[in-house]
Image 1 (cartoon, one colour):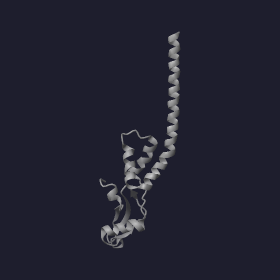
Image 2 (cartoon, one colour):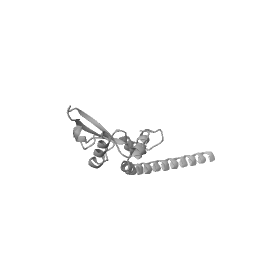
Image 3 (cartoon, one colour):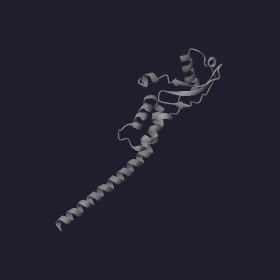
Image 4 (tube, helix red, strand yellow):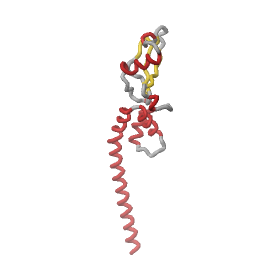
Length: 149
């Protein structure tokens, strides 16, 4: 009977440990659900290198909680464009093209059709040929933030 009591005690401790683990798991999941959107938004606000970090974390073999991975996967192909068209994108285009954009393009959509960690893309129509094109514009500070991209 002495062995029986010891065995039951061990089972009781095991049950308590399982219950503690389950409570801990639920608390952590709740915290991840609450904080993943906040961290995602901070990465978007910081841009560049932080977006690249989110992209890497979305596919890494490291044990990243699924709540974060889901958010960071958005950064793989659907980063919201964040640079102002008139004050950043247009001057950047004209500097790179060494010409006013109105001389090259009949129209350019101000809203980006795509964006990533180092730049964004805009639909445009070439002047003369009327050919639809997509213009990729690298953010001015992207060269020093993510040199390997």
